[in-house]
View 1 (cartoon, rainbow, N blue to C red):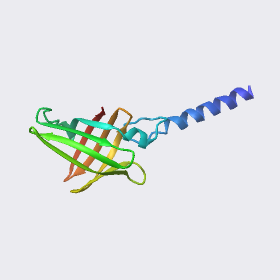
View 2: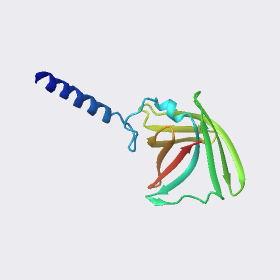
View 3: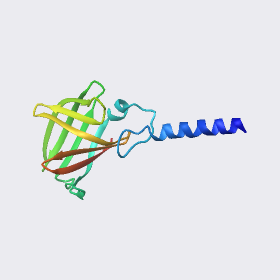
View 4: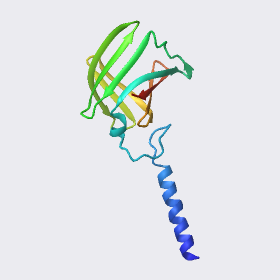
Length: 139
């Protein structure tokens, strides 16, 4: 009986430890991949909300694809009203790895990471009292 209690306590402790492994608001709760392994990918913009309201632009008028590389650099290509734009820069996590910092020739943009899986990235920025959440899927 004593062994059952000990094993039950050990199992519950391990389960609680695994369920608390998630750093980001929307997950994942547990993963074997490092944050760097999950974020280094080619990401395609899929949707955006502003203060909870869907403001996703028409894909025919706007698209964005960015590739975050293991060496801390990124390349991005956006198409706005059929006009292509390309730019490059560097990326980094904040010290606690809760934010993604993208730096290009125009400056730095810090976004809070809400979700980071190997197939989905969700970022939140706050500017001028507005909360903007952008979602990207891996390509």
